[in-house]
Amino acid sequence: MDETVRQHKYVLSEDQMPTTWYNIMADLPSPPPPPLHPGRMDPVGPEDLAPLFPMELILQEVSTDRYIDIPGGVLDVYRQWRPSPLFRAHRLEQALGTPARIYYKYEGVSPAGSHKPNTSVPQAYYNKKEGTKKLTTETGAGQWGTALSFACALYGLDCEVWQVGASYDAKPYRRLMIEAFGAKVHRSPSDLTQVGRQLAEDPRNWSGSLGIAISEAVEVAAMDPNTRYALGSVLNHVLLHQTIIGQEALLQLEMAGDTPTLIVGCTGGGSNFAGLSFPFIREKINGRMSPRILAAEPASCPSLTRGVYAYDFGDTAGMTPLMKMHTLGHNFIPDPIHAGGLRYHGMAPMISHLYELGMMDAEAVPQTECFAAAIQFARTEGIVPAPEPTHAIALAIREALKAKETGEETVILTALCGHGHFDLAAYDQYLRGEMVDEEFTDARLAEALSSIPELAV
Ligand SMILES: *Cc1c(COP(=O)(O)O)cnc(C)c1O
Image 1 (cartoon, rainbow, N blue to C red):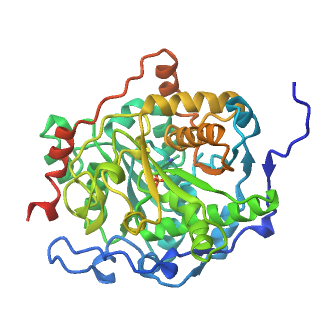
Image 2 (cartoon, rainbow, N blue to C red):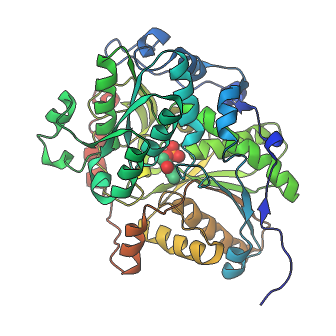
Image 3 (tube, rainbow, N blue to C red):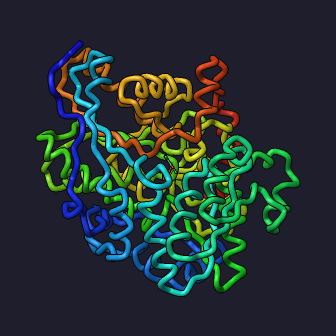
């Protein structure tokens, strides 16, 4: 047994917690293409978004200020679990026999068990301030629904959640946690909305998708002036709120006296990845370090590595603005992999833009490799990861094993954006040897891409 004393955990004090969010827009060589109105096909203005979002968030969406103050009321709530810990994965490194140093920033310490409250809290806060009575939303794995219902409970807002059918059936405990926080949960597609009823006519839609659930939540919010809609990923203001993760990690790596050569995070809509990496990209732009920035996506829903960069809808019914993004097509229904939070057809426009600029890379990972990595991680580091970040862990392990071959100095920073305590059925399936990787064929890809409006004209 190795008895050397090693530091595993880097902890910041409360007064070291950042008090601003970092807006990467201020540091990019060019802005991303604007979202377009689905009817007029010209850029959307604040008034187009006002029925869905409070003005403060609309302004953040288009802001070019480099730093945006976090309101005191939000900082107060953040302090319940922030600053979150950064760990050095000594025991995983040892098991891999790698010279690479691996760090992970752990967001599973939040009340919802993921990074999502970093944005659900400010979103509920601004809505409350501007008189909203109720928020509607979608949820995939149930993480975002949990985070938003928690935030709504804090601010006395009603909350209604459309949960993707496959996940509603497979993850009853997530639904129960959302209900414990006081929100109403519906299986999507539901018969409560016009889009839900219409889409449910096609049996292929019965398992649901994030795109369908978004359409339902948007429809309900658009019809009631006291109700607004909250999105858990993709939009600029969501990515912005998550940058507290990377700003803390920068300080923590400084404590560790280390500089990353690789930053890897999983990407569903891109918010935890952006939250960790954007402050480091700022450092890279300023010439202070040069880590490779790598997105890990599921092989079953590979929007960056196999999608096209085109204007597409954010939802299945085509109610949202058209966004220029890497997309598999807005009516694509991914295989029901366990990482429900990564089953989104598109990617954040800001991340898509960075990818087009060559400022980051992406790789797709099959589910079984992710769970093999997750088991190794759990048995060395003691944390059972959510299925989503196992994609990042799998790539971190691939790179750590490469470092063993090449001997190149490798310092990996990854986002462990949530725990998997509600995902144990997925672990059960893996451990019984029953998990399979479905191939995502070119024929299926071509069919999925055919729904993209920009490609049809
Ligand atoms: C929602 C979620 C994701 C996917 O969303 P991103 O916006 O890409 O971060 C990943 N991991 C966890 C734990 C989530 O809850």
